Length: 268
Image 1 (tube, rainbow, N blue to C red):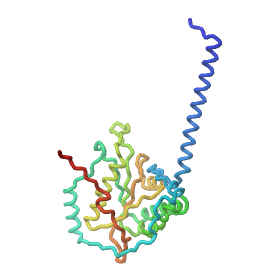
Image 2 (cartoon, rainbow, N blue to C red):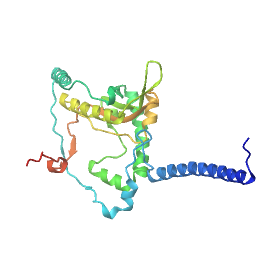
Image 3 (cartoon, helix red, strand yellow):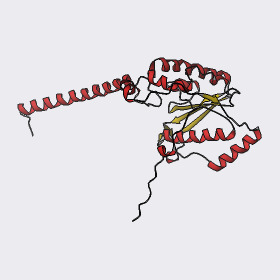
Image 4 (cartoon, rainbow, N blue to C red):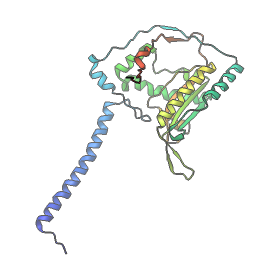
């Protein structure tokens, strides 16, 4: 039988103490990192867990281009089709593109269409309450300044006036037939691709929308609409027709040579 000498007992005891201390230290360090992340990004969306380094921008303001606060707004040009033509264009577009691709064909999306006026108003109340906090506290002056050219704020009247709201949820995982969790690969990328196709389809049909990402509203909207915990709000699209006096900011687009690069096969 192997017997521990007093020296070995002491060494083992010291080693065990060191292991436990480091284990506790690692836990505390991770907690500290989490607290630091929360302090660095107080606006971070709970559903998306996305964190642009806004505060670094604020601290290093001299190294960043000032935002264009004043951008001219011009009348919005829109072509409205008869209802029968809209249906025809929609059907042709569907047959052309069929459906969106997704990681491992998991189709990790849920589109919730809201037409009920009371539900739309409840959605507006939730979003305006959180957006006021976003504008006044979470987002910071730089981000708020960057949005001024769009003449936007936390008041969202269109959530009441738009005939339809489409809330797009990403499913972070699914469920197999036996009830076990099913992996949804690249769920956010997959749903974003689907949203892009939906935006084009709405435009093609003669409808209009605006992409909105209600910050820190996802959990409350999910409860309101009775969606499960595995679904996280990605985007909200108010859909309808533009008002007669609608205007849009006269924005310019980057030239092609700034967004596309060509690499040709070298020949000898």
